Image (cartoon, rainbow over all chains, first blue to last red; front, side, top):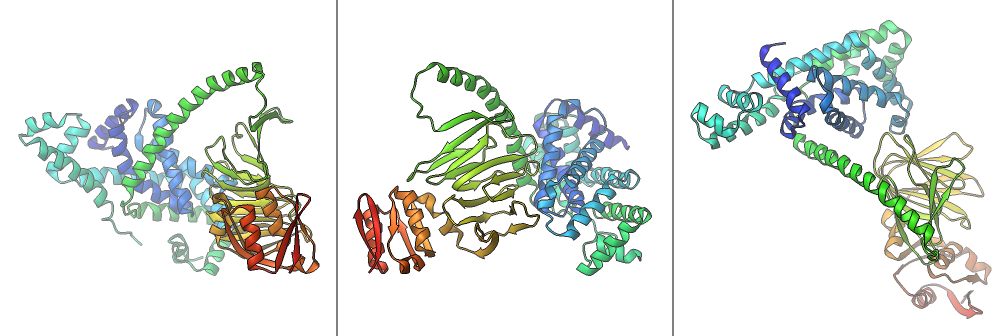
Length: 190
Length: 325
């Protein structure tokens, strides 16, 4: 793990343990789209996929005090298990009224339960999140790191970097927007 | 199987027959499954940023409200665990006459069940333990547990009701009637199942429902605005398309008939106005009525019937006799 991500991870863990809603929002913004995409690849019903990811964050929030390892690993594990639970139970059968969908659920369940191949996905997720943070423009990134990672107040950052509080706020929203935007920048290899 | 065919399938670009071929191939051999697992994980990993990110804000709002809701439920549960025993104690010790329409009984398994009954001409709105709502039409009975089990929500209905069910993929919702069972995850629909009617009608308003005929394996899945009509005598189900607004108009006090046999019309009138009808002519038994009664009094209904159809009426000994003109 690179140092930057290490800091991010420790920061996330500490703030999440404390029940900091702002941190949780960042976590949500960073991970939601990627987790939803993964879930949708294994659960064909879009509504149910959204519900599964929502549940992942609810579960994570409820367990926030006991998370003590790698946040990426934690989120990925909860997501995977929720998908497996969903595919294993009878409830998805209502949404898969034909045979092909049920067989697909079966092979997707096997694919998700395969630890060796799924670790590829987990590592890739970690790297992409890392890139999300790296891709921020320099100044934004500095502000973002100071605020979200070192935990400085906007006032303190404005003093330290000699910029106005308004500029700090702008950089912050730009940083968050940037993270969201860049999610679209990748093209598939296929 | 060529890798490019597998990838085509994984990308969701395979046609229906190609899909079947790939699935069959994967299921044939665990090595095939392994190869699929690896390809799929790699594909998903390489396209991990495909989500366009537009609705993250909305999704966060949804998460946020769910998060605070779970707290509210917690407090509600805490409060009710204190308040409900108090009410029960008060109830036991007061000699208050039994006007409470929720009757609490203990069923065979020892868990408490509630029963809500409506008289003729009456409607009642019931909130179930999961927050779903049911509007009960006249002359109906709904039975439901005080607390739903962990994996299932089950209620029993005699009569007619409109259900608006909270979505919970972990707990399917079942409505049991005499002859058919209905299963949903979260949706709104109307069930009309009076013992003296010849048919049981289930109409879907939104979402998806599944209908099981008792003692038969086959199920029927309804799309919105579809109605499944179970014929008690023939013991079969016919699905037709309806205007769902007409079906649930009873909640607003309206009765809407669309080529409805007069026999059925008088049954509905009897429930709404609590008055007995007698059809005195064979030709009227075959007559099908089309019309709308929007919150009318009984007298207005009878007048409208007389004007708009070949029916005349007279009061005899508290009953209404219908004759052909």
